[in-house]
Length: 71
Image (tube, rainbow, N blue to C red; front, side, top):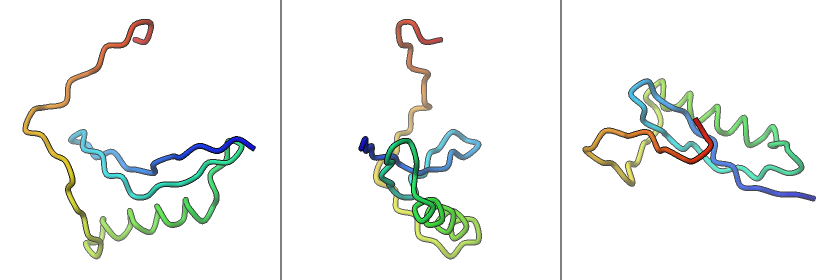
């Protein structure tokens, strides 16, 4: 059985990323419970009842990363 850790997140229009929670993907599938938990956290942030903790923020704008062979 192949397992991978997947962060479940939302990307805001101003290119900010909010990581909602982590999930363990087993054999290419994320459990419905993890997806429901992420959706509930996203809804809480949208309606103002959630808490957002900023762990890292930079004043510089994000720049694209160039990787050989990847456009």
